[in-house]
Length: 532
Image (cartoon, rainbow, N blue to C red; front, top):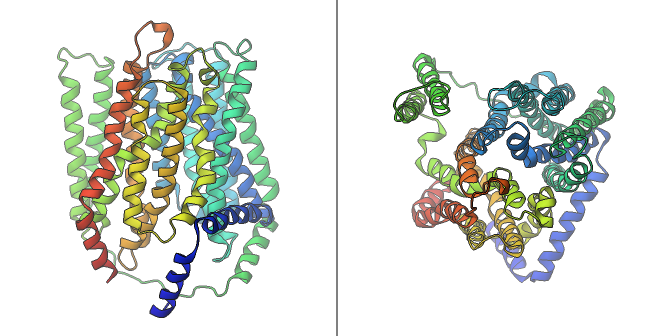
């Protein structure tokens, strides 16, 4: 676009009224829905299971902590570790299995993914139904972990395959709408879990004691089976071929750009492997000594092994980067940007690590506690509606400014919860935080794409997901301690102090926008240089 055209475009956008922008945003939401309805058969085979999988996946995350605490008889701290294993493991599995769908095809990948997740969820539901003895390292615990492992592997294959399917069955013109639809559909499914779970749980408390959660998990097994059947029926070899052919024919032109055959460096990874192995070993020993599985006379021993794990991890990172001079982690601004978002990203993880406990225990005796699954899953439907609205209202806003404002808007309402358990304050927090999320989260990948050097966008986008992996793992490691300390079970008789919990979480989250604001000049300077 030349300068005169750009000026004309900006002038036209400035003349738009707020009502026009809101109207256009609703039109975008309507178009997303119509794109879903009019999608080819093979894309239906992705979209329909995606709604169901959003319901099942987030439904399991919502009740997993309660299931671990009340059914498996784990402590809240141990339940937090299970969450870290599941959510962190899924991100890691996506990194490892992300390219597998390219080798065996979208159809086979999706069928295999649902089959593996089905096996995992059968183990998960069966861990309680088969009446094994409970407790940490009990038979019930190991069956649970086996089930979660299969679920992690299956989901790690599923999501990359689903996105590969969207790419395969769409044209460059329809792809943005299709990606928007698939993101919205998962959020919509997550919202539905807030209705399904309490309905099933309350009607089966006597049949599946002590709380009916096993019945909920069996319903999720059935829904996973339905997703598998939808995939098999809708994504046949014929529909897959037809949808792909249609997308090719509808494209303006096929890219015939040649790939660069860059000379590969021979890198010796022996030292990296040794340091990485040491990191894992030291961390495992830390967990075992902390839980007295390995008895030690000194209480400082677990801390020593934790420090050794941290040191070996830092050395591993240094060794990795030392032999890769062109790696994105050599870019100081990029590294600062993606890692400084970890504090505010912890609030995402607390949607399943803390909010279900909070709504269940802090509001005991009220409808909020009785239907805690519903109140824990209001955010997804808000994002489903707010994302296109906020996108329309802020489409011409400066990206970095939106990152700063959005993270502030998301972090600040956390302090409302520090006042004390109150349904109106909680709903205000959920609404305001969702607005903040809609302001900055879509801009995150946009910023990474814009600061990436020519030809390295893919590498920067992939590495940009690492902090999210670390966020889920780290938050899961400490959230159980905070839940146990500040939101103990009501039947324990111990006092609750949810105000302190949310005050601490608010202080953690506010670090991100404050740091982004303080680093603005440095970050913008690098951004302008990169664009030039």
